[in-house]
Every structure is written in structure tokens, then in C-alpha cells.
Amino acid sequence: MNATASRTVASTDGTEIAYTVTGSGPAVVFVDGALCHRAFGPGAAVAEQLAAHHTVYTYDRRGRGASADTAPFAVEREIEDLAAVIAATGGTAHVIGVSSGGALALRAAASGVAISRIAVYEPPFSTGDGQRERFDAYVTDLAEALADGRRGDAAARFMAFVGMPAEMVDQMRGAPMWPAFEAVAPTLAYDAAAVGTAAGGSVPAEVLAGVAVPALVLDGGASPELLRAPAREVAAAVPGAEYRTLADQTHEVAADVLAPVLAEFFARPTADEPTV
Image (cartoon, rainbow, N blue to C red; front, side, top):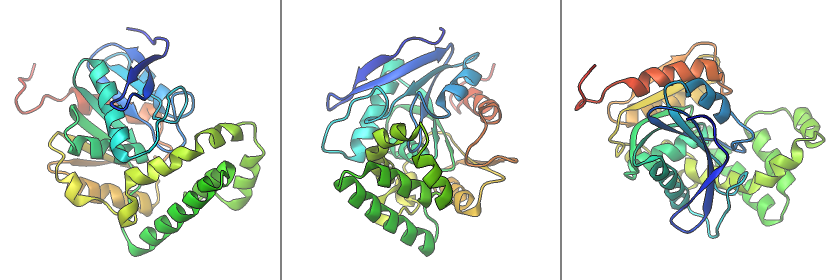
């Protein structure tokens, strides 16, 4: 199966979720992080890399790209969206979640969504008091900007939160791509909720203890410790999870580095499957 035109599937609350199918083989669903969707982000490149051996489903999370949105929002709605996409694959699927998409995917796996294997790259949880305080301040500022309809300020606040220098943020606001960031700015609140606004973004160890499928937790060797430490804590919290570092990679992981690692992990037989 080659790449197809956009399809849609209805989530539990009726929200239409748009997705694209690429490749042939066992199903893999890619879950994007903040501000990303099918037309902007790493999903398409990873799908292309995996397409020779997997059918890859990339989708626009609610409120982004061609997907619709329905109020009121709750993390459970995004878990239902992912479940709907997995149902469209035929029943079960491997899942790769990047950044806050990894946090969402982990919560989905813990809730019993039909995920056969899960891989996550640098889910951005907090691991110290300083990080939790920064996250809480970001969530407060983000909520105020969105409540006032200041989408540009919301997107700029996110960029500052992830470490982009102020001068660069100002340059971005004048770039042709800026309206695209403003268009999906309300979904930054969804990403924050997936990470966990009630606990300062801490690693939800009690939740992750409920992940009952093989898991691979990845980080980049060139990423800062504030992204690598959460990966280690996630791997420790998920029963039986494997932790691996991709040398020389940052949070903007290269598809041609990530995909072979995913392919090898997804190809492994589970305990109740025979080797061939």
C-alpha cells in the first residue's frame, strides 16, 4: 500500500480525525508532539523510512491540520482519538510517540488502548522542583494567553518555555510560517494536559505502572539533561521497559536514525509469539 489521500475516522465524541496511510506491513501509528501535525513535523519522514516493512498511520491530533475539535477538552478525548485511529488499522498497532505525543501515547497504553508495542522519544515530563515550577508558570501563562485570544503570545510562550532565545522568537513571529503556529496554538493546552498539569508535569509513575505491553524509551545523546532525565525515569516506571540513547541526536531526532531502531523493536516477537 502506498501513501493515500487523507482519510477520516470518527472518535468516540464524534470528532473527525484525519489520517494518512503509508507503506505495507504491520500497523504503526505515529503520535506527534506540540504544534506538529501531518503537514508540519517529523511524522511523514518517519513514515517514509518505515514504509518498506510497515503500514504507517500518521494523523492530525484534534484541533490540528484537517482534524476537527469538540469542546470541552479532556486528555481522555485524545486517548479516544488514538484508539479510533488504531481501530481503523484493523484492531491493534504499534505506536511511536514523540515528545508530548509520547506522554499521550503512554497514557493511552496504560488505559488499555489496543497498542501492541510502544516506543516513545523524550516525553517532556518534569523531574525536579525547578522544572515543575517552570512548567506550572508556563501552564498559567498559556491559559491566560489563550483565554484572551492571544494565540501568537501562546505560541511564543511555548517557544520560550522550550528554550528558544527571545530574539529568535521575535524573528519567528515575522516569518511566513507563523500563522500556522497560531492556528494550532490552542492545542498547546492539550499537550500540557497530556504531560500532566495537576502535578507540575511530573513523571506519572503510578499511571505508567499500568503499561502492560513491551516498551522502548529513547532519548538523544546530544539532548540536555532536562530531557534525558525524564526518559530514564519513564523507563524505570514502565514495567520491563528498555531504555536506549541515540548517539548525537537532539530533541529534533533525525528520521533516518530513529526509524531503524523502531523497525528492530517493532519486529521483535512477543513472549507468546514464535520466532521465525
